[in-house]
Length: 201
Picture 1 (cartoon, rainbow, N blue to C red):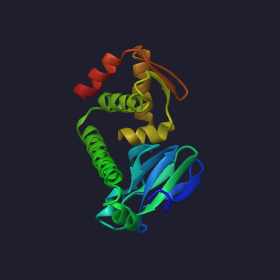
Picture 2: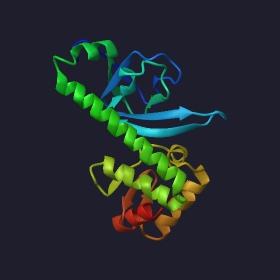
Picture 3: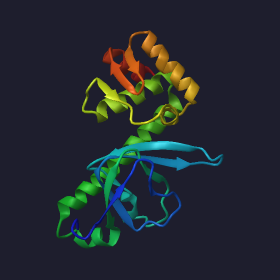
Picture 4: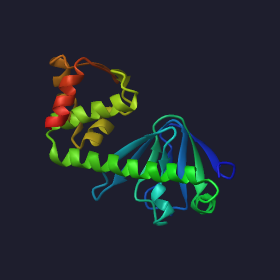
């Protein structure tokens, strides 16, 4: 299946999947980071998820075979493999573990998106900003110091708020010594407080 896939390299900002276009393959991320977003009525977009190396995008195309419901944009230099859904279906019997991996990733991605939407719908802003910090903490192998791969506008979108409100809340966290912040680089001083804010919402 991997031998028959088409490998493509993308630069930062390149569109990999455009919302509304026909789908005929799933994507395996070989390297880099990808932003998954969906547009709505007024032209704005909502970031649903970030996907990294080793993960799959478009697993729903194995069953639905419809137009893409979201766009995928490279946040960094990215290399991906396009795997035709027909090729995956053909290889199920010969490589069942690979197929299980794809399905498992699809379920995991769906749960992450559901959790994020619940957070945006039900939590106050400090809880949502804490969720964003924990999201990047977890995706950076639980290292307390990391660099945001998104700019402030994208982070605000990810948290379901405005850029001004996001920056204000992040500054409050900094003033309260919960975090240290310099540009895009953040260090968590009190993981316990961040986790409490996330839990209480």
